[in-house]
Image (cartoon, rainbow, N blue to C red; front, side, top):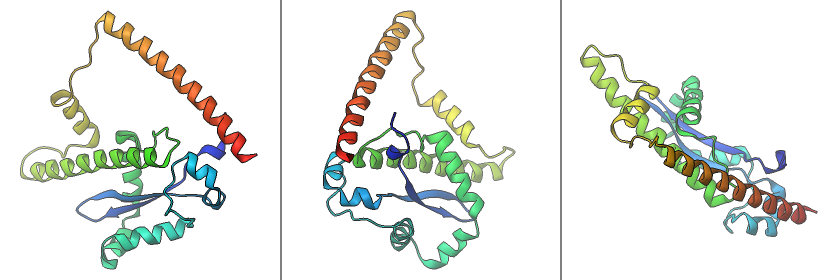
Length: 193
């Protein structure tokens, strides 16, 4: 259907130290062809002030917004933590699950995913501190999610009527999404020819 032409490429900035690590900033890469195409920019709601920048330029902009150089040097020495952040963000917080076609939607999705990952990272740091004082192993991401589901999130309904209603709603939503994707693909195909 869409192919590689509709994929999203992002540049992320990760903070990592001996005390903790988290993804702290992100930029959506805008290819030069998209940056120069006003109609395409309008269709995807790219902000007017956004101009073409290479991935290294995006990274440099994020570094300018980040903490001091000494902290960043320490981050470079912690490469494996960066990979761990992405694996955690993807598996536990859905960082790579955003099915968005507009700039603002992508920014919202990644913000919510990064916020969820940050909350879990802080909670893990606190449980690690508590664990070192007692006889507990620090809570991992999966254990934190289990605890959240058991204590904070409501239990899912399992009755027959609700399951049938949910199934019908999901299939109707999938139908509407498929129609919207077809319309979008027709618009973008017409805009690129």
